[in-house]
Image 1 (cartoon, rainbow, N blue to C red):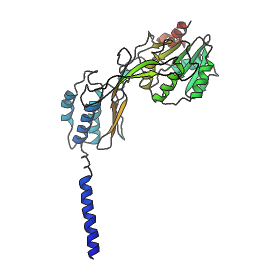
Image 2 (cartoon, rainbow, N blue to C red; image 1 turned 135 degrees about the vertical axis):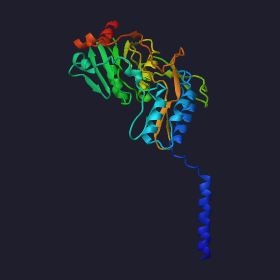
Image 3 (tube, one colour; image 1 turned 180 degrees about the vertical axis):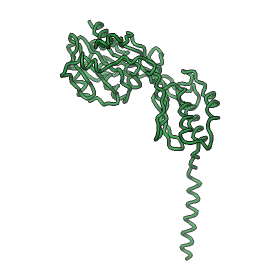
Image 4 (spheres, rainbow, N blue to C red; image 1 turned 45 degrees about the vertical axis):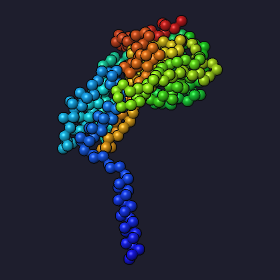
Length: 333
């Protein structure tokens, strides 16, 4: 009996110590969730100054809308409305019932892309699909590559095959319209096949503290060649406003190469790497936490203007012509 009492006493003492050592779980209520999100974004979001957003004023507007007895849907509406003002495609609130977003970066712009026209009127019926790369010869000795998503991995052998195929052409059209981004590893692989030498491409800037202006010094990012015979013929990149995130980064870095021309519309932007966080109630959210600049200090968050601005004209589309491709063909010697 004495031994049993000692064991019980030890167990109670150990349990009490464990409660003292473990951090308390945050309260899961609307006010706590709101405060958690607002303060996290306040300390880590990277574009307050660039976008001239007064986050304290946003707090004053949205905090009074939060009540302890509100439903999950009502809380979601307040939080998503607050995030919407950041005007950022990398800002989302992810819940089991909805996914908040602000996609005006492309919804207010012309689409400038119709793949049906390309497939039916420019590609042959035997065009190749090399992994994620749709490719074919078009017009007079011109290569065409369409890459629909940087979320689809490219094999190095697949890429090398396609570029060898177009080695004797006048040049290639590299189409990234409607490419919403994905993995930066695919960006690095592509760049390595076009780089003729080490070149400064962009600068990345990182948050270093809770202040809205607390950033690191610009960190240089270089294009590094990895093959003996890179593709150095003319490359025309076709863009629209739906060329976003990793695609935006790809276009930014390719502009460092002297043989590259960007044609179409301004890219969709998305120059900040997303930071992921979780609310006490389990909802996840993300927001931009870095910045990317071109070597001349141009911030690419809102998109990269093309070297040659071209829109897909309605009359051309009606006739089955892609205005951007036709203009690009005329640019090649």
